[in-house]
Each structure stands twice: as C-alpha cells, then as structure tokens.
Amino acid sequence: MPEPNFATITLGHTNLVTGKRVHEIEIPSFGLGVWQMSEGGECKTAVQHAISSGYRLIDTARSYANEYETGSAIFDSEVSREEIFLVTKLRRPHATSYEAVLDHCQISMEKLGMNKIDLYLVHAPPEDIASRAAVWRGMEECLERGWTRAIGVSNYGAHHLDDMRSYATIMPCVNQIELHPWNQRPALRAATEAAGAHVMAYSPLARGHKLNCSNLAKIAESVGCTPAQAAIKWVHDTGAITIPKSSNPNRIVENLESLSIDLKGTESAFSSMDEVYISGWNPTAEP
Ligand SMILES: NC(=O)c1ccc[n+]([C@@H]2O[C@H](COP(=O)([O-])OP(=O)(O)OC[C@H]3O[C@@H](n4cnc5c(N)ncnc54)[C@H](OP(=O)(O)O)[C@@H]3O)[C@@H](O)[C@H]2O)c1
Image (tube, rainbow, N blue to C red; front, top):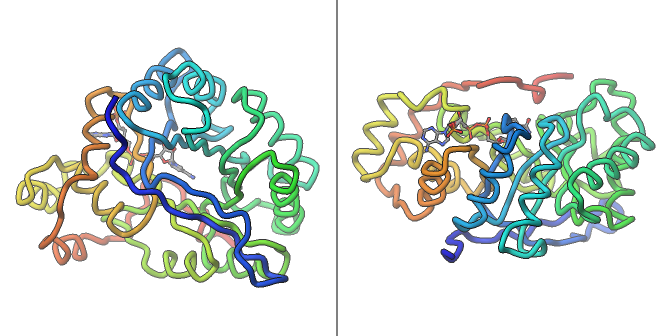
C-alpha cells in the first residue's frame, strides 16, 4: 500500500473564557469528499479505493445520504478506523436547537457505525438566527461528551464567525468553505484564521465547472500536470485542507498525486484567475 504523502495539520479550539487552545487534534491536509456519491455501492467503492490508494481523510455529511456506506467502507478497508479521519456535518434543517444537535449527532454515529466522529461541522449557519447560540451549545456538548473529537462550522462568513464570540465558549477549529483558483476568498480566509479556525476548502475543482479554463490549462502544461491537479495543488498550497470529490478510480489517484507537483513560478498566473465564482450555494453571504 502506498505511504500517504500529505502533511498533517494541528487543529485546535480557542476557549474564549481562558484564551487557551483546547482539544487539539491532527488532521490530514488532504482527503476525499463524497458528496453526490450514491449508496448503491458507488460511495463504498470510491472510499475503499481512496483508502487503499493512501487517502486518510473522508468528508461526508448527513445531507449526502451516504454516511452508512462511508462508515462501512472504512470498517471493511485494510486500514484501522483510528488511522482514518472522518468528517460529517449537521444538516441545515436539523440545526434548530440544542436537543436536535444531540439527537442528530447520535443518529449520524449510528449510520456511520462509529462511536466517535473525528470532526463534526454545522453544515451552514442555521437559518433561524435566534437558534445559532443553542445549536453551537449542542455542538460543544457533543465535544464534551466525547461523541466527536473536534467541532467546526461550514459556510460561515466573517460576520457569522464574529457573532460566535458573543455566544460560544469555544470557537470552531475549522471553517469549511468553497475555495478554488476562481474564488480565492482572501478576506474570509483571514477572518477564519482570526477566529482561530483552519480553512477547509471544498469544491477545489469548482465542482468540475472550470476544468476547461484556458488559463488553468496553460499553467498545467507549464508544470507538467493535469488541469485538475494544478487546481487542487494550488488550493493545498494556500495552506487549506482540501477534499476533492471523485468516484472515478483513476482520478482518485490523480488527485492524490497532485500533492507532489511543484507550482513554483505560477503564482501570478493563479492570482489573476480570481473571478469570485460561486459553483453552487453561498450561505456565507446570508444574514
Ligand atoms: N460544506 C459544504 O457546503 C460543501 C459543499 C460542496 C462540497 N463539499 C465537500 O467538498 C467535496 C468536494 O467538492 P465538490 O464535490 O463540490 O466538487 P469538486 O471536488 O470541486 O469537483 C468534483 C467534480 O470534478 C470531477 N473530477 C474530480 N477529479 C477530477 C479530475 N482529476 N479530472 C476531471 N474531473 C474530475 C468529479 O467527477 P468524477 O467523480 O466523475 O471524477 C466531479 O464531477 C464534496 O464532495 C463534499 O465532501 C462541501
């Protein structure tokens, strides 16, 4: 089996009462996203192929409706559960109250077949603004009870993170956001870091929408890799954890191999590609 060639990153949560970093854990800087993989075997096959190719981080969510296959792929793989970092997310319609968070965290664990999640995320800022504090208290309780090793958020804008300072005891260790060469988000990256959280980049290929981009093709040719590899490596080089999705066995390996590509000399070409492109939803801009 190939040795994983990604780095690990230390995540931590800032305790707003003591000012200390608590609940520190290590996460691989690269992994597989499983959104849009069906439970008819597609998800299980892809996750098992990824693990046997060297992946050690898998990103799922309740809303992807594949927690069961994701968990069973991990348990049936040749790697122990402890070596895999599993992320799942509290579905937005479930993010309504403290009790709902506890209930849905337990349901996710049941579906995954796991007694502990590695990182549990609020999928997007709860739509009912008044429930955000209670939802986060529920997340903190999941951490305290040992149901998850770390907690974070996804699709939080700078103002959502700032608001957390008024109701959180501990701040999130991650903000998972859309990030790729066509939406480089310097302000949101800075706000995430200011909150003590690490950026986790989703849709590094802009969901595949931009793989025909001529600027990307030129960069890829200049460094001798595929366009997808150049985009993924650019995201990884920003320091973000990234989780490209593929259910194609060759592309699963191709994406992992992007980590050994050297993009030196392409910095200004990438800088000029930002067009603030949103590939799907953008809850970061909501109130
Ligand atoms: N928190 C959130 O709100 C949120 C939102 C979106 C995504 N995510 C997470 O981030 C993960 C990745 O984002 P994403 O799924 O939106 O999009 P993505 O990773 O940017 O792109 C996936 C698309 O690119 C194709 N692809 C993958 N590798 C390729 C390659 N080497 N060459 C050509 N095409 C390639 C895939 O098709 P094939 O499968 O056929 O290869 C798929 O159509 C998700 O799976 C999910 O875990 C989170």
